[in-house]
Image (cartoon, rainbow, N blue to C red):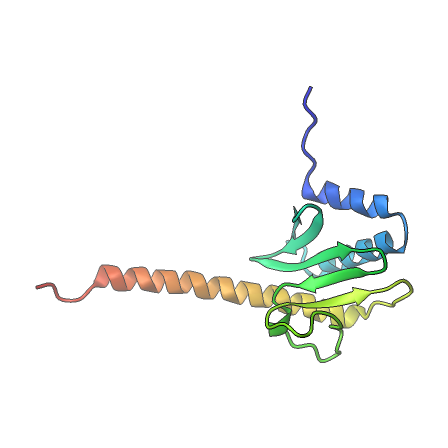
Amino acid sequence: MKKRAESPSELIDARIEELGDWRGEMLARLRALIKAVEPEVVEEWKWRGTPVWSHDGLICTGETYKNVVKMTFVKGASLKDPSRVFNSSLEGNVRRAIDFHEGDKLNEKALKALIRAAVALNTSSTRGRSQGRRAGRLQVRGGGARD
């Protein structure tokens, strides 16, 4: 009998358990925070084992390495970060990340604000694209005078 494929949420659960140390605990805390801020978030498993959270587009990833848990905001360069939580991938024009090391404390208030801002950015981008498509179709259908 063929084994049922695991859902992304189950794969994330397994990763947290398999880590079995501070990295698993940190990933679980970040995941809980994301879900608390955006209950409709979609959990995905991409790029051969990276937890990803989406809502109208990618919000962030939760990567685990030997000495760090990295939370990468896919459109982080477009987000305001008044608390200066971003501490990694600062040189790019698109993404920003937060590296968490063993013993680091979460600035939950600032993280929640970044997650909310990322969701809002995705939602506004999605609305803009769909409105633009509708406007484009209307222009084509309306057309101009024909010769």
